[in-house]
Length: 167
Image 1 (tube, rainbow, N blue to C red):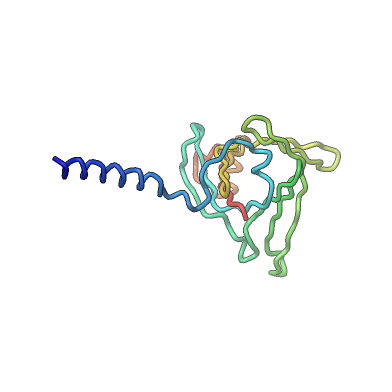
Image 2: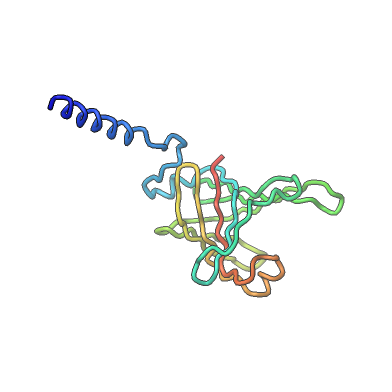
């Protein structure tokens, strides 16, 4: 009888020990959605997902490194985001461009605004998830068939979703 009680107690301790040692040591545990604070810093694109009209994934690729020039980055700082794009020019040299935009977050939507000549451009992304070191956002612009074909994306792509990792 004492052996059975000892066995039950030992199993209980092992169960609690197993729960206490879950695999959350990679610092990517979901956090409270304090998006304004968590988004601050440098984020690098890691994956691109192609979604159909029902937002189902129909394809994915690793974020391109633009022929060795580096992957796209975003630097968020107090209501402003700098998009950093690198590519090879006609002389096969890496060129880096920066696009500065204003942003605000309402609920789980990021609203971006920037001036393009005399026009004010506004677009929106939906925060699918935001963790300490990983963020997934959905570009809410609906992609046209012509754009999908031109970019070589999977047929049926309607939305583009990005996974970014914090640097």
